[in-house]
Image 1 (tube, rainbow, N blue to C red):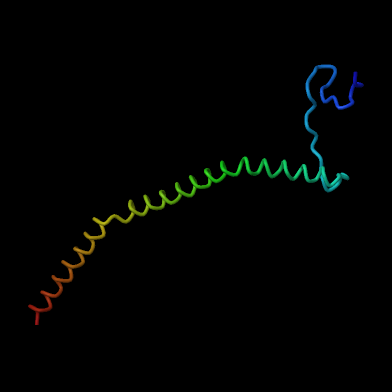
Image 2 (image 1 turned 180 degrees about the vertical axis):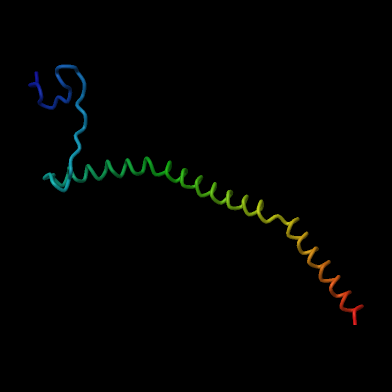
Length: 103
């Protein structure tokens, strides 16, 4: 039978596995294989969360574009623009008639 603590990751008191301990690779002396293992785990975590981030960023950009488009359509509608042009054209015609009939 193996001695307690020799490869056994469970705590003898409550039977639970110990939590992972955070380390700073720049301050602790780690072997190249340990550093490679850390990099592999970090890469796996990054690849796992990347699709979720892409979806969130894509939805955010899409919402921004739709918001800008909606605000543009709301604030500058074609009906008001054409009405303003028509009013200006009527005023210009009236001025032209006054000039033509005046002198």
